[in-house]
Length: 247
Image (cartoon, rainbow, N blue to C red; front, side, top):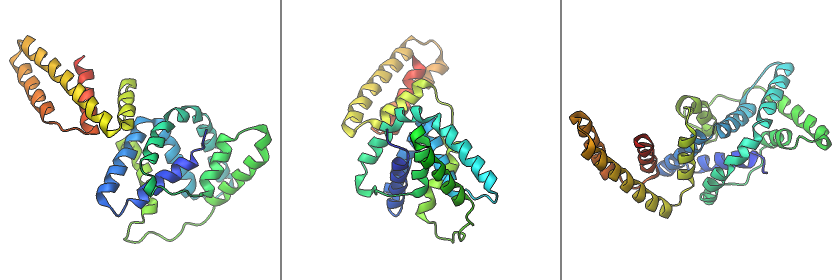
């Protein structure tokens, strides 16, 4: 399997290269955030690759321990990562025009330690750990000015994942989110129409059967809201979630 450096570099470049176009950036940000919410493993790789690249420590021993703990943790997660990479492949392939092929020494050395952990590669792994340790001991660069540098966007985002996108999802919710992210526009149109019809039929049935006036009012309000929804991935997820609750 590919290491994570390719995906990390690709995501960074997508965010950076769409930063000046507000609408495009918001759309890309939403999709990328959605993929992180879908997979805890994916967000952990993203966050820890950022942290290794940006963290600064004063003691060599502390740096060595941090690198060892981080790479050991991610190495145990790499099989789970493999299961969710198709989501990122889809995101990247549809944004080729703003996705750059890059080389990042930090990410590449993390990949070497995490994904190439064989006996034949021990010397190379030791060298990679030395490079990463040395990088953590560098002095901090100049502080950012008033202008936001788009190159720090992905790092800022990673710090916010835990606050905004780290809710616990059920397996069913994860599956819905995964399938929605991977949908093409044509598939989305058909799927949304179908799921909308199913939910409206279900609501009509509940309204007809219910003898509770308050419940009927709520069901009618929900039905009216569903009727006005336009096709979008957000709307699809909402309606699918409602169907899960109704069943």
